[in-house]
Length: 170
Image 1 (cartoon, rainbow, N blue to C red):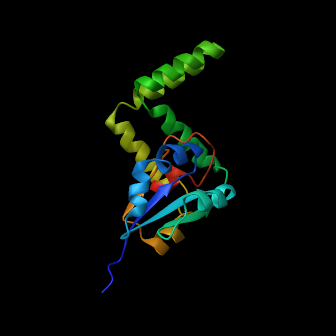
Image 2: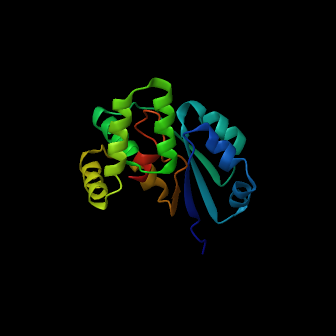
């Protein structure tokens, strides 16, 4: 009796994913496993490149059409980005302040980051995100492949794309 292969989704919506993950020994080892099926989720415009460069018997390429973020998704995306309270985000805000001198933007972004440190605020945001963010987009791929693991390569995706890593993980 044949054993059903394990399936891994790997998102490649950003070009650096190809370099940082797919062009490594790690990916070559994964791709060589006979009991493993890898499904690369890529932008439709790049699908042929990924099929040519990385496709094989157990490495499949699924194209995803680009869609701009809806208004509510854009608001949630920006809010989640500004609620992050990390050292790198602080440096980013200071760099932006040095470029544009916009102290009001800096103060607002710093206040949101301060709020984002509180567990209650993070829980509230997650509830809002769960209730308001559009669903779907990847449902057909989940039904088709039933992945055992999803590797989202760019959770801080700043492009205004509806079907990106955050939607995939949702």
